[in-house]
Image (cartoon, rainbow, N blue to C red):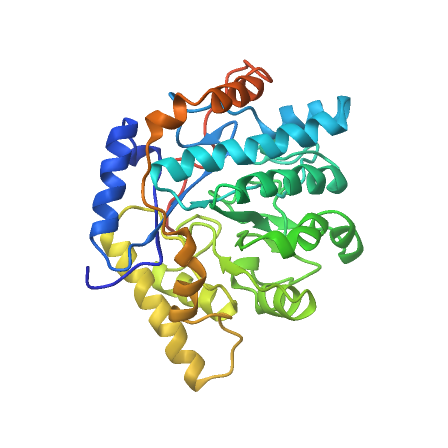
Length: 345
């Protein structure tokens, strides 16, 4: 492989049987040295790319309700969920899970987040996500907290339109930003949101905002993890993919997700990264915190080779924990709001 990607993200369209998934991951790993990290969105509920014969995870909202009935039990189940999810992903060769969602669920907002959120109150989101993160960490998988600085109040879906959050700075600090700020020390990576939070930057989407990505998150909060954009092709953003990528890197993103599956689009994004670094050398702009070598070093421990998923599924402890989670909800999971809704404009 001429150009070595930091990672490869897979979607439902790429996934067949678990044996086929493992074969695909072996092929991807063999194409590059060092092998890329394998990424997946495995939140639970509507957004879980891998389903049967793996665990049928409930929605985050369902677990949030269990927490409200019995906080100690809710925390236990959240930890169990993260641990179980990580064991499944690492058994197949995935090292990075684009989760947890740290957005708040807000009445009247667009349902693209909705039941993907742990709750309406930031304290509840923090406690459940914290337990989930601890559970996932036991498996060796990397978490990616999303969607910074908070998508829950958006009135439109950023896959299709650019949301504008009208809340003042004080409300953002006490609500939307709180889960990200409190959990930042535990998050190896954060994913940006393609939205305008007017109190933070009235003009640029967060993904393109040095004020949000660099001055707030890096300088004021001191965040040390990786910053990765949400899918750069989403319709909330405008311009061609090279320009979109360049602006994201210049604002402070270390990594950019390009998820169309098109090699031409991947090449456009790669050229955007190069252009951003060239511009950084000639013009003052914040740019990413980490260079290519540093990013590779941060990702080294997440280059996980596939294991034995059949052995995992037959493990009695795994089966017991799985039954407890699956017993939370038998409701239909609903359509994945992140699949097939992005267009370039």
